[in-house]
Length: 87
Image (cartoon, rainbow, N blue to C red):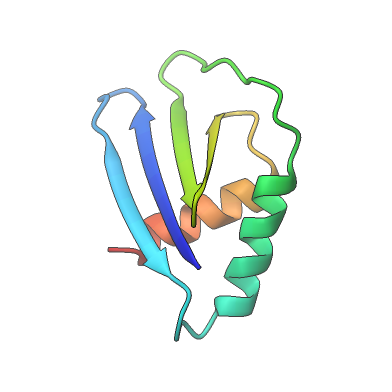
């Protein structure tokens, strides 16, 4: 499973992008479970807050748009992991 995160917004407004492929990744089962949970979350639009981050999650061929502070725990954990470990 390929997971890509694009973060934009924040105080400086500098975008950040990272991607991670779960094939061969030691945490693959956990990451794939988080990805499924992130995609299953309700799709109600969440308006961005001033200086907050907005995210575009692309998981294989599906795309999800979300924003702080309305992230689910699965979305937050997945985003944090991909931004920290991804290239």
